[in-house]
Length: 263
Picture 1: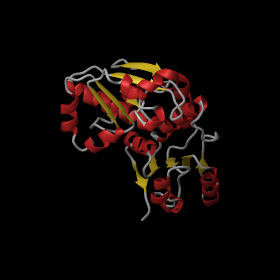
Picture 2: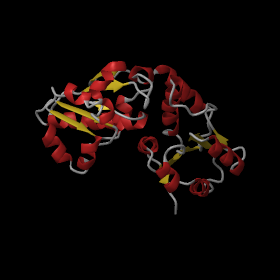
Picture 3: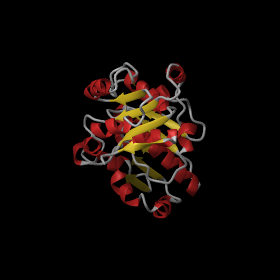
Picture 4: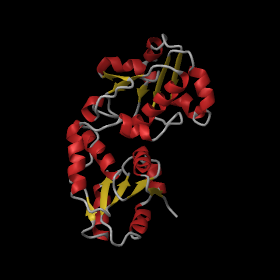
């Protein structure tokens, strides 16, 4: 399978694929494509996984795992003809609530799945089993956590291009919810410097950040994203954004908190 999209989208797709493969008794091979959605190899971010093979893919080889469409002249469709079943998100989206149907479709077939969805029921513990940050990132996580108070609340506010998150999780909803923690500092991860400045004004001296600008287009930016995910997962409570797979996974890892939405 080829996990697609950003970091969190890929993580949930991988554990879905593993769970499905176990159900049908198939081997799993993950093609980790380095592209504009995630410009980093799996091995740049995580330790090796023993339960399935991971192939690092970039350049011209990535076309094998791309959805066929007009802009790529439907060439991937020709390259994918050797598979008995090819499923991308346009088909998987309709099957998310019908795992039995999906299992029946792929059983006994050589299947290519390209997805950024959580398309099959999975145990959340697989996130920590499969996605162990590489040593440099782990050291950063532990160093950061060592300097944070035990009552720190994690906050992830997604802005920029996510219109649904902005609409359903507005800043005023976060301010209202954060005000219910009068004695707690906040570890903030956001892709908006304006949000950071506004919260620093609203909660003076209580907003803690990594100190790095959010950037997902570089290897360092992706390493920082992994670190922030695992830091936020270990805060005393987590407040996340609606329609953000990054927030959704952190909430599953943390186990305490909520997705903040407009009242």
